[in-house]
Length: 193
Image (cartoon, rainbow, N blue to C red; front, side, top):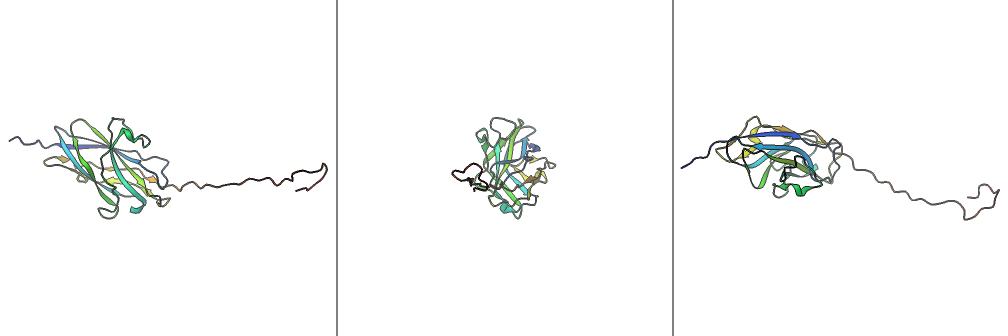
């Protein structure tokens, strides 16, 4: 029999958190760019543990998602989700793996090869998210990335996003205008309101 070669998966990351933050109810807010590749042949990426290290509560985040950069766009644009494939299945939230933690499972295993594949980690904020809190996502070691045996992830693989500020939603003020002037006035009359 032919045995599979033990690949080492390397991970390159970059924070893509928008500097302007996001408001409660915002969808598909980009957090991290993750590029994965093997050193020799194929490996199957099966899941990703993500911890939340900001001041936000688990309930402030409605869902965490992972998108594959289908067209190799190189950057994440939440206004053009057709350029990506969401690889996470049903809604996945912090707290499902203990407080401020989750294990993202994929709708199908992601086949990695020596050709780099780019993914984007994004989230939806709850409409009830508390303003002035922050969301920071991280994976502390290569053990946060699960691949099929006999493959392994570089033990030094890790990431931490910048802080996503939860902004207060804009306040809308409605003004009704009306005239207090009389329908007519005689010239020289004062205080004819």
